[in-house]
Structures are given as structure tokens and as C-alpha cells.
Image 1 (tube, rainbow, N blue to C red):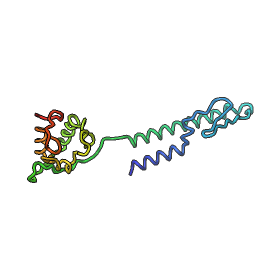
Image 2: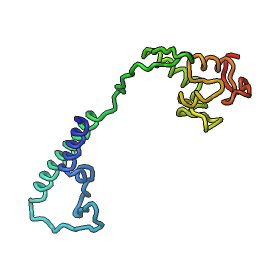
Image 3: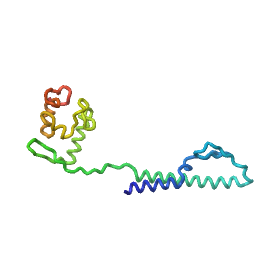
Image 4: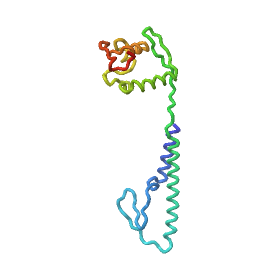
Length: 180
């Protein structure tokens, strides 16, 4: 809520300050260009002595506008800057065996497991899929359909010791990382 309010406020400030004029430098000399128009308007010759005063006033407003636009952009970046992810990991019951025994992993164990998976498995199992067989994912439902079932900790350990194809008919220890 506060982040969207800050973004809206910053956008309103930038719009109010005229962001277009903040970053476009008016050409020097007797011509001025307007953004969005291809027309070039020539100024009439000024009266004696009024041009330096007019340029000083315009220069002051331009500098102030640029400063305020920069401050608004800086505030917007400060408020909307990316921060660390604040996801709380709930206790998830992980099945240990087919008899219904479960265990809960600590946050440190989950982080270590993710790190190990990314280092050893993520090359072939991108986004929870399998490159060699796109019909098989790594969800517990998919792994429960394998022969033997791999939806428990014991099933995964058995698989890493002796990897077989999804239907359990072929030994794939030569192509799949294993302890064998």
C-alpha cells in the first residue's frame, strides 16, 4: 500500500513539474523548439536590455525544475528500491516413507537443500521439469506415479543410489548423477 502510494506521489510530482521540460535543453540562440512539434518558432528581436534579465529568470526556473525532478526521481528510487525477499517459510511436512511418517525441515535445511539442488540438478531440471522427458515434472504427484515411487525421502534416496527411468525398466546411472 505505502509503496504504491509513494509511486503515485512521485509520478504526480514528476508530471506536475513537467518532466518533459526537465530533461530537454532549449536550444541556444534565437530559435526554440517545442517537444511534439516539428515546427521551429523564431523569436522576435527583443527590446534593448530585456534579454539578459529574461534569460536569467528562465535559467533559474529551468535549474530549479531540473533539481526538483531529480530529487523526485531519487525519492522514487529510494522508496521503490528492491529489497530482500521477506518470505516466511512455513513448516511443510515432508513424507519420509510410504507408511505415513513425515518430518519437518528447518529453514537452514531448506536453504541447504535448495543450494545443493541448484548446484547439482538444476542443469537438467529447470523450473521443476525434466529436460530428457518433458512429460515428467518434479512435483510430489508426478513422482508418486514413478515405479518405484519417488515422492518420499526414502524413495529419492533409493533413486539417487540406483537411478532408473520413470517406469523403472531401464538403469540410467550412466547419464544421471548417482552414487553408483
